[in-house]
Image (cartoon, rainbow, N blue to C red):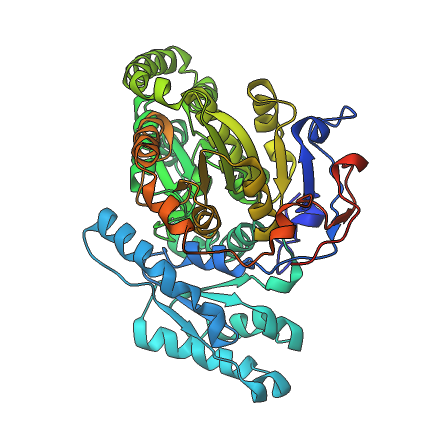
Amino acid sequence: MSYLQNREPPKRENRLGACIVYGGTLCNLADKGRRFSCLRDGSRSFTQGSICLLLPGISILNTLPDNVNLVHGAVGCGACSHSQNANTRSGGNMRTGSVRDAMWLSTALNEIDVISGAENKLYNAILEADRLYRPKTITVVVSCVPSIIGDDVDGVVDRAQKEVAARIIPVHCEGFKTKIWATSYDAIYHGMARSLFEDPEVNEPIIKDDLYEERLSYQKKHTVNLFTVSSMGLADEQELTRYLNVLDQTVNVFPTFADTAKAYTLKYAGLSVSTCPTHDDYLLEYLREEYGVPYIIRHMPIGIENTSEWIRDVAAHLNKSDVAEQLIARETAELNAALDQYRSFFKGKRVFISAGEFRALATANLLHDLGFEIAGIRSFHHDEFANVEYEKLLKNASEDLIVNIANVQPFEEANLLKAIKPDLFLGHWNDNSTATKLGIPSHTIYNSGLAYIGYRGAFELARRLYRQLANPAFNRNLSKYVQLPYKEDWYGKNPFSYIKSGLDVPEDYISKEETAL
């Protein structure tokens, strides 16, 4: 059902039953006929801090062209924009040929604002942002403090909208409300759908005659919405667009680096296609319910198998299966020939993967195809959409494969890596620092400047991993001089000692002995 009648979306713990606590084996995760679904979330008696949903939300909003990102909260809540600005500059330059910095402002709440309320401060900031920059949109990102003190942000937005030319998009990213960061994507899509999808005075034609209906029918038959994520770069967009063009489709790429005017056109496409179900289900379901746009949200096109199945799913909907099979046969033959030189080198090497759930699992199946042995997987949360990827992994990996579901928790990761001793680690930048300090060769799984998606991405990843493993000296030398902040006796304990409730982890798998960090 659609939640657009509400001012903010529900958290994913409630909407999807998502969880962030699990430690055990792949076999145990699939036991009792559950097949990876209906996990009950648990708790940890000790937990380390990590990011909140504000950061992934801002990483997408900063890519929107001609947008001012107004963070309503303490000034530090928007500081992550500094680290993301390189992606905004390079991504914009590659797409438009011009360099644009992320435009973000803050209401910079102080102690007086917390006591007295900050609605007027937000109202004035919106007017000032519109006057100074004349943007198409202003995204008002709500952080923790305004929600705690009871600021009526949506009321302020409604009042300010009458005074400014920009469209105002409220995005509720209060970090304390959920530990599932993916709720951030729901918040972005929720705000966009409430603010950008209806504008009949500007977009609707005055006369809807037979010619209009004929053009609309043609557009739906030949237009696909391609939903991207902030971890995808231009190379990945171009690769997937190339496949869809072969299927005779015009492609709407949304939302990263997309003109917000495209939001209105999404409902006139004939199909919406996800590249990552973790990101997209909220808006895709809304487009289907409200505007009858069907969608495909099953595979993340990473690796040969997933890319081929992704193309087949789209082609089946378009009645283009023959064309798709010719494309797949041609691309896979060329790719397999190119990968032969790497598969023998990778054979038997053990790899540990840590990332968002879908990217981690899809990458694991790609690495298995390249000859690696999967030594362990850690995903940042779990929900029902990953079941199809776990099923594939169960066919390709040992049932004793270690699986850790955690919203980072680097102490668990450090323990696992110390015990497993993989030959290679793939993770986000914060994960890679842990592996590198342990002397393990590492490669980023999140870099929008590199190709990961599709057949091209499979080859480019293999080539990068070959170079990394052929010369791992930097990580090994670094580990001699840099230490992690954990006591040696922690590495001798079970890594899941602090997981206490809520999951069917075998008793003999969890140490009952408390450990100190």
